[in-house]
Image 1 (spheres, helix red, strand yellow):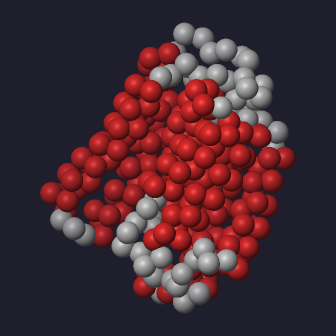
Image 2: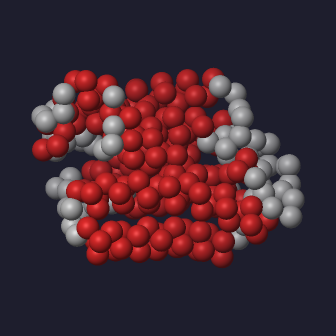
Length: 234
């Protein structure tokens, strides 16, 4: 099945997948990650090894399942999900937005809290090489790639086709924030709003650039700067 070259703004194609596809891909991704985590708990117990392995496997499922599904059902390539070449200036724009946002957020009630116990023990050398470390790679590299493919490339592309850009941007940002909600944090509601704003930024970046790479880089930079800011606030 071919995808129309005509887009709402001529940059993002009108995708053919349906709400049923969304349910299968999103639900399948979540259940697969949950089952794998349960298997790890059985094999290794509630240990750091279990936690670290789960942080690698869950995003890897999110990275490979959407492209696999649209290839299998519609014969489409990963480019349909936004993983295609675009104007490199948007990558620079994404990094700039990430830096500005990460600095400005510290002046608002949404600012990052104090560092966790683990981050307090990290050295400056670790913070520099955090994206390549065992604990940093999943959150700084894998998570941005997987979440942009699923949230923006797959879910947002469908929502914008059915509801239009404005409503779709708000809904995908809301979904993005809810998926990151953690009631265990004392400032959980502030973090929810923070992630909603980030979701809007990433959605707009994808909308304007027409490809996911600027959003991935922006997302990764925000996560990386969050690690540094957490550590500096200890």
